[in-house]
Image (cartoon, rainbow, N blue to C red; front, top):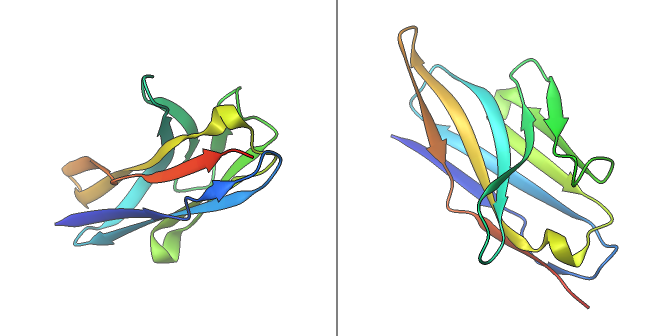
Length: 120
């Protein structure tokens, strides 16, 4: 059983900052890629940022220079630092993790999401 829990979503004014956290827990060998997606009302879910176990990361063009992703492998956690937030960043943010259960078996898991609202 693997649980993925996001936290940190809130209402923030344009230009503000938020830091989202994602924690993976349960029985597994390790966590490989950790990713943040977001889904705005009426839109498809989109990839925002991704980070490998070794720390290689990338962000979507729409948030490049404003958002950054990091992780703590010892705690199986990922973080999304969001700066200079804009109303179009309003969405539910989901954490997606690739968990290794054995040398021959891995599986992807999603969290329930955390709501970020950017509004004055």
